[in-house]
Amino acid sequence: MNLKAKWTTLIEQAKSSGLNTLRFESDGPLELFLGIDSDKNRLVMIQVPAEYDPKIKLLKNENIELIFIKDSSCLIIRVFDSDYNAIFDDLISSLLNSIDESDNAVNAADKFLLTYFKWNSFFSKYPKKILGFQKILGLWGELVYLYRLLDESTNQNGINSVLSGWVGPMGAAHDFEFDKHAYEVKAKLKNSNLIRISSEFQLESVDNKDIKLVVISGERSDDGDTIEDMVTKCQELITLKGGDFSLFLSSILEAGLNLVTIESCVDVKIRLVSIDIYDCSASEFPKFTPTNLPIGISSVRYNLDCGEIEIYKIFSETF
Image 1 (cartoon, rainbow, N blue to C red):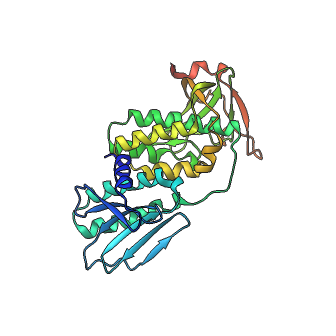
Image 2 (cartoon, rainbow, N blue to C red):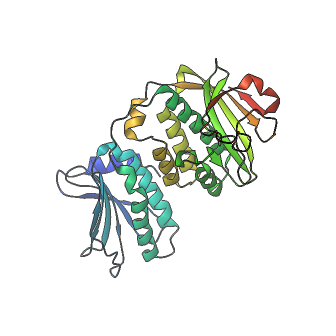
Image 3 (cartoon, rainbow, N blue to C red):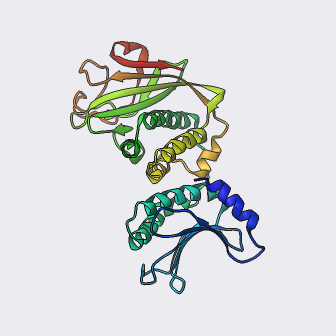
């Protein structure tokens, strides 16, 4: 599927006015069309059964809308801001996957609506916000490790399990939580041994899960990756392996990443130097947790020297 090529074809064939459409091949029970309206806005449209009635006529925010045209039995999703065209393509890819998995036309139409509701919030405007370097470094580290886990996943279920397990942006105690293991990811520059532990909960085992500390070391370099580069790399893997891209978008939005903040840090490039993983489950591991803090002490923040925890290292890779 090459949406970019199809949009190019549609633009070249477009008339000076009116709606121009191009049929998109689909294995599902409904035909899907790409379109460009007279204002050059992009849209995706399906023809639904004549008896289908979603009980809505129009749903919209400032950048996207869902329209139901009963007379022609059409459901249309239209985007108004070209800055969101790339995300709109991701929405269409998700839409195609949902429709192709549907066993009948009504079910496919319902999934068309559900896709709009899942993706609607990703098309909202955000206030200008500039991220500081430490925040960028931390997000870069999480995305580096996320990419690694996605790359190791062999199928759609594995990809979606990884995406669902990235819970740090949602305010969970650890950055990644799975059935048996939890991972706390810390990023630092290669010339420093210190990482910042932000609370007594970050290295605490929850529900008897093994807790691992993942330390990502990098350096500022023109050969490195920006936050946008890492988001794109993850996106390509998710799409390639058929994962649910809306799970990824939800997480990066919760992490404070959107079109505005990503654009504000395009000049920060970080090259991956090493990944080291430490087993924090041992009682001797140097850490503060709720179980070993004196009564009355909370909200603990401290630096941890990676040079002093070498004996707990269980994995190391340099790049």
